[in-house]
Length: 132
Image (cartoon, rainbow, N blue to C red; front, side, top):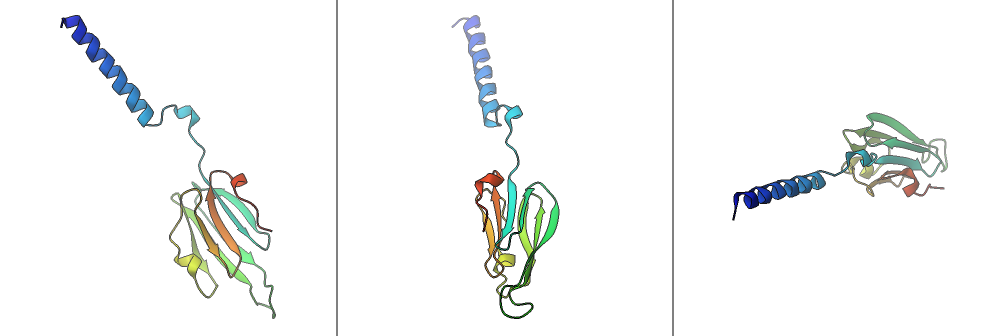
């Protein structure tokens, strides 16, 4: 092999390695995906959409539907922070929504059945059917 052949092999190898690295790191950064969204809704009509990158805490109130003034009335406190979503407080008896691990990936959800509250992560709000 001549010196020119060796130089050509090194140049081609460097170019191929650079292209592989560019694709491995995401390729075209101008077309980076938009952040995921968190859709929080209840059977009583509450509907809110936030980006998963938000740092926010809010309360979802569900009106009572049973016998008595406060029957079935409920509150769930939802917190979005550090790219995760969790229910940090609820006044239902079973507390399953509060005990649920924080969610952060599209398709994951936290449900509070007693209050009819659903918190879901999606790529777009249109990906989730509204409760009625």
